Image (cartoon, rainbow, N blue to C red; front, side, top):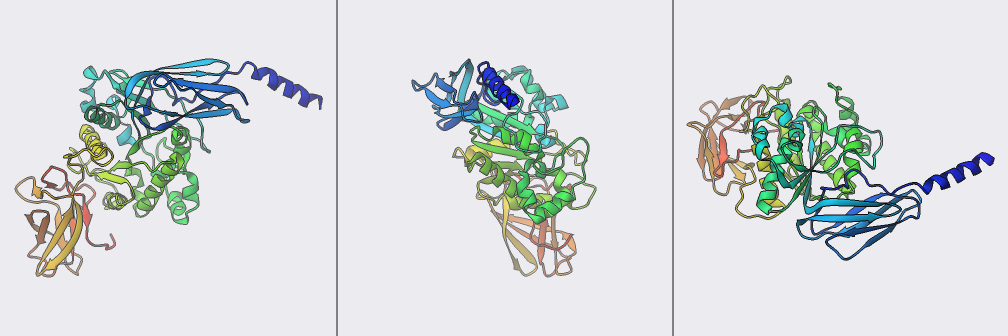
Length: 461
């Protein structure tokens, strides 16, 4: 009993010396989502009074530390601008300076999202001398894992300059730069990526473990390199801590390490997206990159993963950018051109989220096929201005009859329709386009976006 009394008294004594504190994501130089009600939170003594006063408003927001030493307020943010100051008072005072309001996006995935100037990317290296862009702010979450969802992570916000850009995601940077320029607003980019990871580690583990199909697929993952492989491990440590932070949306570049379980990727990926939206309590847009052509060891594994991604693009408020034309070497799983990847993601967001007109952003996608004699006639969505071939002859078009043997096809384009035929196929049944791991087709929309690889059949590979 005496020990209990001493412990209680000690806790009471120590509480007099504790200070309010903030999570890493709430810091000077941050960007808060504009024209929204954003959460600012932290820790304090139980029942301690905390006030939050932003410089853009005469209002002071008040909170009281809970029994478990937490506090939070919701603050109304103004239109894009700044810099602002936020003063947070409890037993101590914290002053957040150089705070902007604008658009906030989380940028996640594996190595192609993670790659930076430090990895030798020339397109972002060329940006370094002129990279002092105060309207672009970075928050980089270091690689870490956790068994359970965490409430804080390391990191702090920093303005974009030639130093901070060195180690930041090139895709995210080019995405953010395009948004900031087009919208004339500050843009905050939260980078949380890890090369070599599967989608399972970014998915709340309860989603995987409560689904027998996903759990079976996760069990087949072979650990590689220094990467986590257990469901939820990266989500718990690198995503969960920032889910209280208000965002506009997410961009994603991943899939290469799920080629071995491509048959379940659509189910996993769309469940992951829904899991993130549930964690944020917001139905935000989610735009992703279809994996690039590459010569995988297991034949057709890349083609099947791209097919799963194409199917995932039908999920609510998602969008997929196709990059089959942005690859210089199909033996390299890391295409060097990150500028155009970021640009295509940004164009999708500008048109779809921000409703900017006149921006080509969707690749043509196969819609329907009908057979007329010895020809297959295909129509495409997102090809209102028509299709075109880059080069003398269309490549990567294949056609087959009931024997399921595919032959190179002759192609004729009329507006947004494609007529496909072959002297070797008298009665067509199926057509495939760029449906190989390393295929780089040359059929585009008139606006210059490549057709998404597809097949009209569902035959076993």
